Image 1 (tube, rainbow, N blue to C red):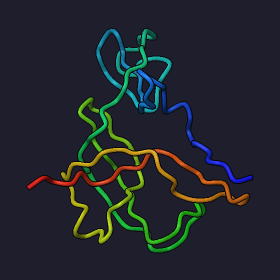
Image 2 (spheres, rainbow, N blue to C red):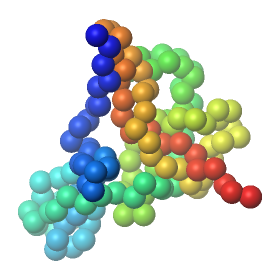
Image 3 (cartoon, one colour):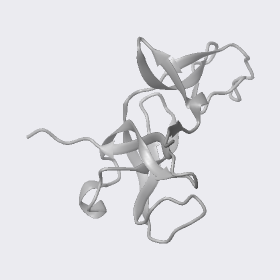
Length: 138
């Protein structure tokens, strides 16, 4: 039976009936981390709380993979880093962004979605957070 498998389940929490990407925030200095940390590496405080992260961010950098690597993701695909307003920079694969050179640019606004990005050896859909360009309303 084919299934959908969410990778990195620890990256998510259900908040108000909706799946949210979450990090941890230091109660002492306010620094936010993703993925979550058990203590703040900035001030060494161990009082951190789980906080939902913004749905949108900006592309810090990106590139295109045109050869298959060990991840088994069909090529070509774009990947890179996204900066969130909370001060977190995270690695991601981009989706819904072809042609890449037209839809992706440093500083462009993107939003995360939960979506299939590959299949495993048992033909299960592997899903996770991916970022896609935010359509600019004209």
